[in-house]
Image (cartoon, rainbow, N blue to C red; front, side, top):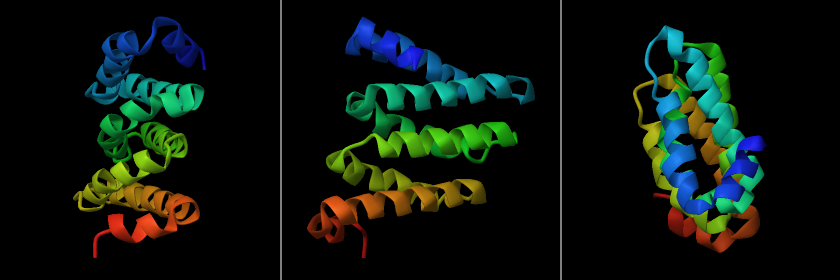
Length: 145
């Protein structure tokens, strides 16, 4: 949660420019030797989402495809960190943010990698459950036929 405290201290503009850019760079690192960097970046996303709560919502939609893609990583520890981060991000987003996350999650279901598909289905289940509890009338309007 130290990363969330740092993000609150420097403000929203610095969060976007410095912290999130550094985390995204770590998650996008390629190669077997960079698995630790990818895992660390994902754990940082989870900590930011948990620590900032609803204040992380503007960044949640942007990072979701990256989190879903990490669930198909070759390294098991990166997959687990990606799943944890994705679930944490979804848990911290409000009803309006959840509605906006449906489309990227459905795109994840169409991905050719089965691990990404599985993670997307798990997230969609969480999103639908949350929306069914908080906004049942809206749920039917946002899900595809």
